[in-house]
Image 1 (cartoon, helix red, strand yellow):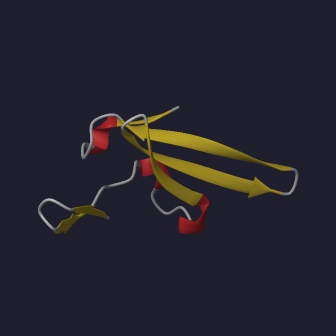
Image 2 (cartoon, one colour):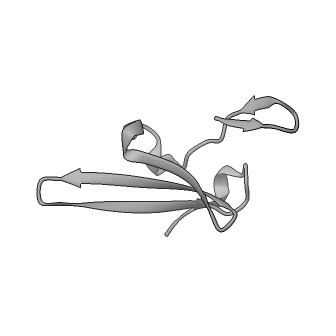
Amino acid sequence: MAFSVADEVFKEIMLPDDLVGEIATNLLVMVFEGSLDVVKYEREIYGSSCEVWVMKSYGVLESWSRL
């Protein structure tokens, strides 16, 4: 969900297909260098890893890119 302070309106921001269905506690939403980012953490027995997804054009589903 996103909230526009200027318009006082909520709207949905869709995740990339690869993140749909992920456990919410494994995802961190943030802004980095002016872009919306989602970090997916995976905790495993022998270590952990993360993926970083960047939305290059705000609000455009097709602009999600995995780094």
